[in-house]
Image (cartoon, rainbow over the protein chains, first blue to last red):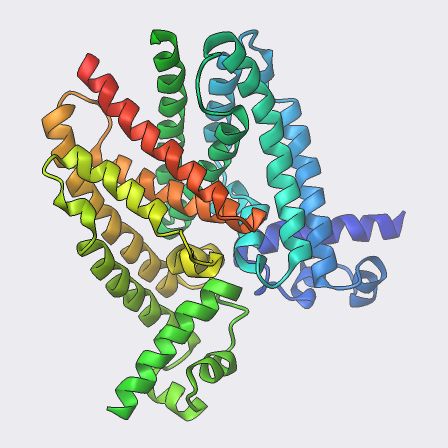
Length: 202
Length: 202
């Protein structure tokens, strides 16, 4: 029980520290201090910092997956309403959170490690693509109902929503201001509305 | 002359290594080896790795600024055509380049350093915002001509184009495949076309 607790503390420390300072800048010692566990406990649970990062990506996907699964955007009957409400929900998630708290562990880690750690890269891809798949399901249903002849694919649009969010986080980091991310999310919302509006005209 | 050469070699080494492995993972020794200069030469030109990173951001903006200034998208008479051609140019820039070669130094550095190095963060912001300003000028002219009553601002749309590009790079890194970035750029192109098409209908 105590060991399970140490593991979980280390995973949560990874979420916090890596989103604040990046993967490379976060040392095993920093993770142990943040988690309040010994280095012995660290290496009991994880072979290496990379091993922890891979586990942290899965931990992140589990936490955020639960958040999205219980989010109110699922309550709309029309899948297009669900999609727009999902985008609004992403904007709401920025409110009252600092930049490290509001931004994505996976986008941050993959930026640094895509060439140097295939294991971390693949763990980040699994999380990003897994979430995009849930949005692609909503988009597919919306497309079937409202834009059956549209030439864009639901998968591609779902991945694009994630690209906008990741890029919006980078701009927010550069400006040290979340407002700029919110504006990009509004552009994404407008794009989705125009795409479906346009399809109805055809 | 020899010293100017060493400085320039170090700046180019920074562009290459930081885009490949990130800022933190790139050590002063790695930069010296890549540049073929001594550590003495490094510290003759730069006080620290952070100092080099700030100079590298300015160097990057100078190189890419010249590339964009001479790019063919300026040749169109209609600013809306210029804007669409700019987006196509961004997609063309991905062709025949590896992911480290095709992605952005500034987006990569700021992802890691936004909390830990305000100097690097500000240098990245200056580069991203400076480039966005040139695109905002084009969008402003396109808006005046084709969408004078539209409620979105040229500045906001220009920053959004940069958010999409930065996010597209992250997805490409996660998938280890540039194609996914190209698709997001196509979504951005379609958004711009729909925005202006919609404005004409009003």
